[in-house]
Length: 78
Image (cartoon, rainbow, N blue to C red):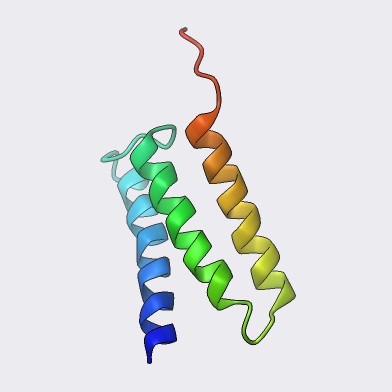
């Protein structure tokens, strides 16, 4: 049951970020959006280790890496 709740929480974080972006409530380059994506994906990636699901692990940890990169990438003033 705990794994199911964690999985639900991870998916919910990603979906909140997605909905926030689609509804123009969140900037997809902003910290909140990328933090929600990174945390949600990290949770789902961890859950995918048992039983090991290679496609799911690759997807989620790639999502984490991209989100963390987006959080810390250099900002250019335009």
